[in-house]
Image 1: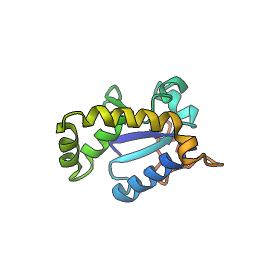
Image 2: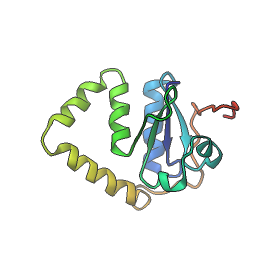
Image 3: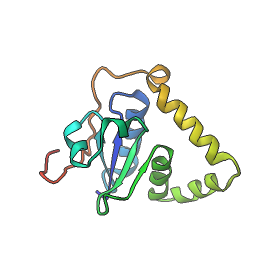
Image 4: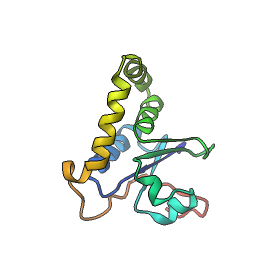
Length: 135
């Protein structure tokens, strides 16, 4: 795995998007940590307050390299084969990045009302194993 994807495992939309990404990637580039896994987040120095700002993408080899919110989604697109073309086009259209950021914020802040909340946290088939190999 090259990147940790930190997602809301109680959000239906977030969990479904993680499942889609799992099917596309098959654990080659991404591993996953639900925001509800406080022990793993603490190992990465991520607080519950950090999680309020949306999904987080962390470069495993350079953990100081982090993306959050819509920037994380765009970086995931850049990493996926062929995705960089779509991200480049998206970023190149005047006003689209700004609008996308605002839409992301609205969905992030209202995700449970819009898409529902799971009764149990979704645990990925490709969990992140951190320093102590705790998966």
